[in-house]
Length: 423
Image 1 (spheres, rainbow, N blue to C red):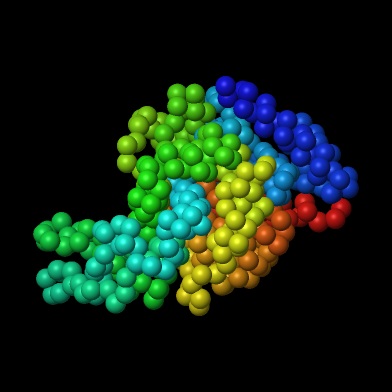
Image 2: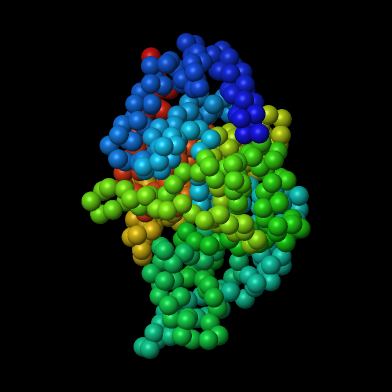
């Protein structure tokens, strides 16, 4: 079954290569990957990724790039796990964690299109648990949290843009302290807001709440909604909350970066079948599957005749929705899980409905107005509408924003844009 799927995908890639050759003189299909402009250019990207494996930046990596209609680069290097015989391949299954948030955002915007959800009405009209939010204003002399009512209701807009006031304790010291204090004081809300909605940006559990809104408004569990409205229409058969036995054979192992820069492999995770689903994390995918979603968005919501969103909706998702609020910089409370995060130092960063947006171009890389986000285990994507390009790179390493993994990501990105230049 899996072999048949990739045979069909391979056939599509060969067809795409012919189309790409008409757009890019000199492009030709070779083996399993069609180079960007010439085979030598593709070889440069191969060399970057192979060097990353050879020098210990990652035990294994899968990376892919596409235009709206063509996969223009794919590469898999290294092993699925240190010490294991299985090599990385394009169909390797990864835990992509927060990269689910893009699927959740797409699902929510589908329901906005259908009139089932509203961006700017109080979200508590759909999910009453979001009503009467409380804001943390500090701690008294005994360390007891002090709360007050929020000055406005939470909306879907706030949740999709991470301006709701919900934060993750991993990147919010006050939230971390609150959760510790709440264990000793009954009656406190489980997750208060850290600020009034639309007054700040902070990455957190907003999309987990959107997942619940989708279940209520869509009338079905989140996994089923994703399958019926996103993954099945796009042919993303390796994307879901649980893995089959066949998919687990293809799963990449997790590794932890030590203080000396070396990597230690973690034991394989135990198979589980989830019954409760989050819109913020806990999903599996492959690079080809996820790239298919990126291509659909790059193409205005359409892929191979299947429309998952209207072009105007995709445009709204890709537009700064938070005004002058600063976004994208995170300070860790647990270095074992995440480093501090600042992907583009000095760049003005904003947020749309589902993506972080860089307002300034990245030197030797993506254009201004590009879209991006990531997963905890160092999986990353970007969409560059100006260059008509989308890319994905997947590794399985902790902590998040691992310095060496990010360095490989940046080298890959720069290699892609060099390959796009005229020979």
